[in-house]
Structure formats: structure tokens, C-alpha cells
Image (cartoon, rainbow, N blue to C red):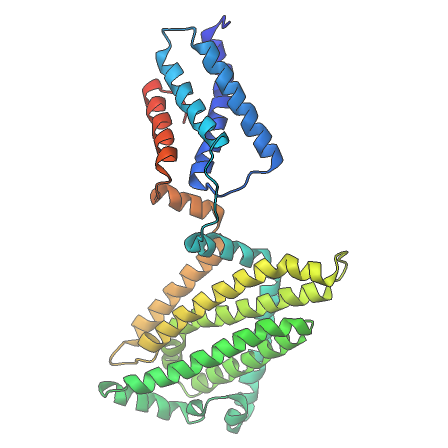
Length: 363
């Protein structure tokens, strides 16, 4: 029997709110599996709310509170006794917005090492070209880049009025193919204890540094920025993420201080490797599109300021995405763009929300 109703509500309402929050999480992510402590707590909250409903039913004047508890208990009962099986459904947006950036941050040290080795190669490539301009053919793998940068810029700008779509697409596809090969090799070479991955990063850094130094020394830094930034701010990080995956694989192969055998270590990192590889693939596809339809078009068709601004904006978005996106970001987006669940689940949720508003309790 309830002696003091106000005290009863004050003491029990935190448990009602906690149960309501658990049910809200189940609505947002119905495929998430709760662990044993969470299940026990959920069952305890359900039993307590059911008992409170039985006790409050004796107060005929407290109809609003009773309706609120009825909705809450009904929704919890539906979750516990639901007969419909939960089947796995692909969630590409959740994977890309949550799993990929969180996996990237979990192995941030491997990414930092990849960045360091690439910068080391870039410094060497720039220095080598600065000391010997005739070393272009040895440092750059593309014939298209062997000529004088000033001549190429003049040719590109003069031919923008002509039909250059085929030429642009051909060169863009050549670069994209090269970068895909580099990415796959950088990731797969992790099996060689990471030595192959580091050598690929070093080589790619040498090429990048030589190209940048060649154009900057020729006074074509603006052209270089307008050409590289739109696709490079995504393409280069994608290659680095591929190398990051290769270094994660190398860590599993080496297994320093690990008690697991090699098979267990590879199984443990396999999910992260697939996630990093998938994210890298999406980034390369985007970079290929931008390279074909934006990067290869120069002034006067596209002002360099527009291309540079676009590249800088891309870089800011990518940095924010990889550093901030995750579970909290996805949950916030889900509150703004909510996809309704099954009718029975949605009905229970709406009933609970309606009774909460009428009663003035809950969140």
C-alpha cells in the first residue's frame, strides 16, 4: 500500500526514466544485443515498473500516472516477449558514419606512422629533384609529368577551350588505377611484417614530393594547388588509410607480447581490416569522380580559387568526419532523420510518448 503518494512518485520516477531510456535505445538500434548485466537490469526495471503499476492502480484519482506506467510497461513487455526473430540487415550509412571513423581512430598510431613515412619520402623526393632537375624520369612514374611544368600549364590552359574530355578522362583513369594499385599493395604488404607497406609509402612519398617540388620551383604553385587539392585531400588520406590497415595487419602478424596464436590474432583484426579497406575504397571512388570532373579542368574554365576553395572545404569535412563522427554523431542524426520501425514497436513508442505528455512525467 502507498502511504505517501508524492514520496512514492519521487522515489520511483528515476527507475521509470531509466527504463524509458533503455526502450528509447532499443528503438534507435533494434539490432544491438544487450549483454547479461544490461539484460538483468532491464528485467529488473520492467518488474519494478509493473509492481508500481499494480500499486498505483489503487489510486483512482491518479489516472494520468497509471496511463503513463501502462504505456511504459506495455512497451517493455513487447521487447521482452517479442516473438519476431531479429535478422541482420545491412546498414551502410551506419557503417560509414560510425564504424569506419571509430575504427580509424582506434588505430590512429598506425595512421600517424604512415603519415610520417610518407612525409619522409616526400622530403627526399623534393630534395632530390631540387638538386637534379633531370631526375624527373627516375622519380615520377608518369610520362605526362616528365616535361617542363611551365610548358604543361600553358598547354593545359590554352587547350581548355577545346574538347579535352577524352584526354582528361584518360589521364584521370591512369592516376586512379595507379592509386588503387598502391592502396591494395600497401594494405596487403602488411603480411611482410609491415616492411613492404613502409617501402610503398616511402616510394609514394618520393613521387609526391618530387611532383610538388617540380611545380613549385617552376613558379606554378597555384596551378599545382588547383590541380591536386580537389581530389588529393581525399585520395592521399585514402592511400594512408590503406597503409594503416597494412600496419594493423603487420602488428597482428608480429604479435609482440600477445598470448594468442597467429590465426586468433588475424581473426581479431579481420573486422577492422575490412572496415578500413571499405572506407578507403569509398574515398578513392569519390576522389576519382572529383579528379575526372573537376581537377582536370583548369582556368579559364574553372578558376583556381574555386578549385582550391573546394579542396580546402573537402579537407575540413574529412578531418571533422574522421575525428568526430561516431556513435554520438549517428544517434544525433537519427533523432533528426528518424526511420520508423515496425508498426507494433512504433505504436508502443507513440503510446508511451502520448501518455507521458498527458501526465507531465518523464523526459
